[in-house]
Image (cartoon, rainbow, N blue to C red; front, side):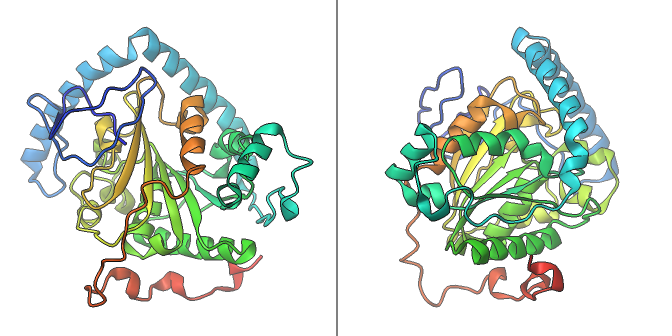
Amino acid sequence: MSVADDNDTLDGPVPAGDECGTPARQHRSVRPAPGSIEPPSADLGSGSVVDTLTHTVSDATGYALRTFCSPAGIRGVAVEAAWCAAHLAGYPLGLVRERIQPDGGHTRYRTDSLSPTQRSLMLSDITAAGTPILLVHGLMDNRSVFTVFRRALRKAGFGVMHAVNYSAFTSDIRTAAHELRRHVNRLRERTGADRVHVVGHSLGGLIARYYVQRLGGDRTVHTVVTLGTPHGGSVAAYLVPTPLARQLLPGSELLTELAAPAPRCRARFLVVWSRLDQLVLPQRNARLVHPDLTVDTLELPDVGHMSLPIHPRTVHWVAGSLARLDEDQPDTSAVPATAPRRRDDIPGPGDLPTPGDRD
């Protein structure tokens, strides 16, 4: 589902949405409209990059004044600042490695100790309630960013949730995706689940997408949720001259690889993005537009980058979507047996067990 930008030109009519970002099915091509902010390509010459960046910054400044200075924008900035302060206070607690709890509080699926909301989800769809959810944080962050998010999902009836930390010195998304594969396999082994959901905030969503789309993770991941993920890159990455930041540039080699055809990818994507995102620039680059992927999108007008995991509309929409496991799942039964070999068929560094793989 996708709520399109006001400036986008779409093939076909755009379903109406409400002020909270009512989702609508995405399967349409998106073409930039005249006057829209275009991200610079990573392979442009230095002069072209400077000119394009100047134009982008100029347009972005006007956009920021219109967005951040509105009443909703001011309120969003205040919430963002308050949450960043609270998150900073709890950051040290998130450095501790979390152990997997296979029962997730739903031991033997007893319902007598559950709240009415949890009991309702358990009785209506025990598979949805029991599907493990793996939480992946963003750059220079840790699992504490999901403190509010996971508590809200647990109240909604979901049982097994596990947050992981990857190295703050990660320099390659592909390597991080192989590490994510180990976490997914360990979670499946400990819980006995066939498939899991993965929720990624910011960079965590891009790591999850690479794993699912390029490393065969769609076999073990039912749904990927991305919150403020730079699917189209971010011009803010030009400010950080590191190998990882280069992968986040619009038009980078890694993003070009992810834009390649993926006809056999069977996972569902839930994408949440905000017009107030101060790190994904331009903000519309947090949308996921790919002809081969099943994507539902929620647009929020007044939520900051770090506040996306705690916003009530985010939690409500994600919980409602994860409660419907088999809705609109793609049919891959028609894929011929002689289909070209993918990267997921090639063993990677994450395929071999390591001593730390088991708790």
